[in-house]
Length: 425
Image (cartoon, rainbow, N blue to C red):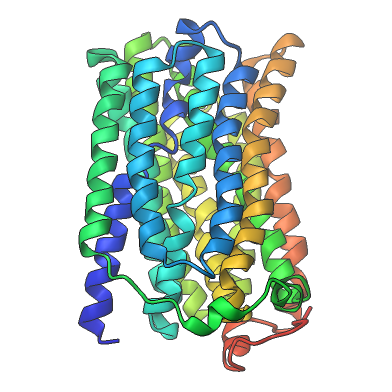
């Protein structure tokens, strides 16, 4: 494929996905408002956050296997349109814990058709030597899409109301569906892939040791990342309230600070991590970032009463390193798993990885409720909540250690043609 051809399609892919991904952390920034309006606890808010992730997880498992039989583009387009419809339903009909939980679960399900088809599109259209960088750019784009609503929802919701703001979000997501439908090329599915049976996944994925270790590391990565993403805005809002800020000001500034850490930090981290993975190796890059993010999780919550400039600096660093390992996992599977089983490999990765995203937010909420009930101060409440997230990168380091020690890194595997059986490590 000519460079101009894949470049134009890749730009359209990133733009359409950016517009369609606005909903991911929307509920997070609304937690301070809805806990009061709906009279729900932190644990209930965490359950709603987790329900969205659980719905997305279920969709990921099905979509991944479908990608070995159906073209990527139609799945992305329909998912973006349905996400817009779901957010419109939330704006119009969410009234309490039960209705909010139900609608966010539905939105999570349809949202699950966005991310994996884009990765498959990258695997099919981007040259191997630029795949890590392209994956990093794509992941960075999605992270910015996660972060931007944290700011504009914090600014617009107090002024115009959160429901009208959600209607506008739905319109943006519908525009994303139109961009994907108009400009992203449709890649034909090779006829040979349609004749292969499900038994191929046993050897190509389940029997592939390198793939299994990558999937385990991705699971630990997601435990930390989505626990942090889900609770960073409430953390920022509460610390600003504790320092004398008003509710409206704290919501707007807290959303801005979270958007700064998640969007700017994550965007930098994804692009940097993607480029490093092309240069240093997938396992080496992932382990470097996992170690740094584990330290950040261990100390971040204890900075609740620290000088604001120090906290913002650490938050930005946290945002960078907690996402910088992400491109390594997707690029890894593209290279250690044969093309005919790549969708199924993505499904297994998401089954475990997004299972962690459904569990981490309510786990953090439970820690906050338990420590609050024990009548300890807010610094210790948030300190222990974020320490819980450090278990994720620790698991990732354990999983990837043998790959790095034995140099079973992905470019070397890719040179064998990507057809590994048991893999190394």
